[in-house]
Image (cartoon, rainbow, N blue to C red):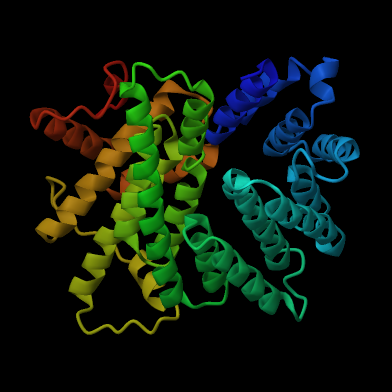
Length: 389
């Protein structure tokens, strides 16, 4: 792996782990180096990093430079896709369509072993088009039809891509079709599990092979594994939105296998378990309630107040299990909050609200002690004193 490729891979890992500031600091070190600023792949990751740091104007300049150096997309079409999303509207759509056209040509001309890469790029371009139709062009009369045609093409090209089914779920949510969205979320999660297990098996095989010297492949597997974080987090949020609270909690919990240093997955896991507990509470109080499928049931569930005794137990054993699962996730999330000041204020406030809803800091302390007694380790040695009774 070349020095430039190594820097690019490190920057991608930082972005996947929600560290855009560190990624920008890394890449900026090479901003005056001719070999870097004339490298299309470096420019593309720099543009992406600038976007993640909300420096849109600078990102526009960088992507424009990337396309200038590689007008036919022989090195990468990322510049076309990302510049299109920055420009937006019909003008932005033309950049993305050009990138997709280039990619389709590459797919036909490149050798068979390169097909997965270019297939993935085509699907990314279709996703980018859908995003514009769902945002900038959502009021256009053909928007819904365009989204449907584009997602159908993505599924036809690569039906095993879990992100395609996540995006289809998003479209169905926007169309107020929650039951269909639920089906697609479940499908996406099934495919993500297959992908995640496959990457873990590949990593284990490489680690156990003492004669393995293919650092490039190892790095690619590791990067692909890390890059699942944000798509999984998105899937968990959609699952919560349509009432699949168990699925949402499971998806969020699986992110911890990839990294346990991000706060938001712990919050999503806790929030999903909290809503699952409230769902059971709602059913106890409204045994004859019928789900009309219009979102009113979810609103009613959200308005339910959990009944808990002085020991933090819910109205039933199952409700108590959900409450405790939420508290365990919040306990682990608190470790991250106290260890870092980088957490978003809004997320901290949401966690604080959830803690109070589930019994306050005393409840966190109780669950921490319970898990210690059962032999579980859920926190670092240097943070538990931060939680006061």
